[in-house]
Image (cartoon, helix red, strand yellow):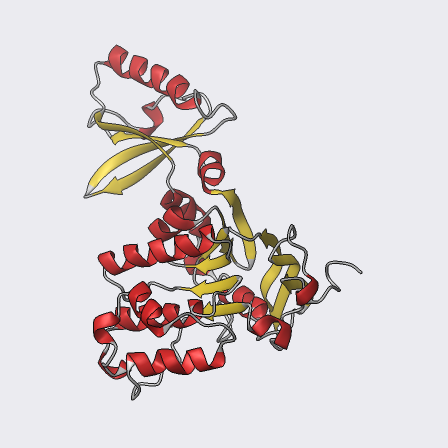
Length: 333
């Protein structure tokens, strides 16, 4: 029996907990997801990032079993998740973008309701402590802040100790302290062996939590891999304020680098992007001729900076032109 045919109960320990192969999802003539493939293994967090309308929510909803693929295959713990089959219900959970909490129930009553539906739930007190909501146990959900509701959502998702967890913008509305505490909670789940698929608009969150990530744009993966590898591939940055006596055409050519002009705080700046296979030495080789050029001209490179690319650099590079995307059907994000 192939992995694709094997039921969840027979899923092998060494196999991916989530497997996606050439997934495509269409809304009429519009193709929201265009052939993406990836795996998430037990004890790994995979972050799915993307511009608005990129297709990430559609991808997650397909994995959660709410949509049947237009083409390709998806497997969760070895099973087709469409329709949320019984073999997956006690092993998979999710924090969705939109909460389904009952506002008239208290925090404790909400947890008890979810515990009644779980096969082997955590104690209510442990869930309250885990989410930092012990003092809010008797408070109605309607009186919780947005961030507290998100923490409660997460508590409901993890009380069944899921093997696979989908997190769709889990820290929306949280203050920095609560967000950091939530990162710790999620990190603990991963270290205990859960496979986690995270979507987030907080790039710092992905940097902190993800073992691997992908950036989607227009239904396709435009960058994918371990965070370090993705960032290294996008090059290093050399930047300085444009000297008053220098035109853009006067700038030197640097090995392995391309130059661009940008505006910061009303001032003209120059930014070189340095790429090449030698990630350790490429910026040094590019910087030397730049300093020689400035020395020969007697030019000062104001506020000169040298740094590696950041995840934000990669994301913004992928997102260039996103504002020109045609309107997408509702629910096609």
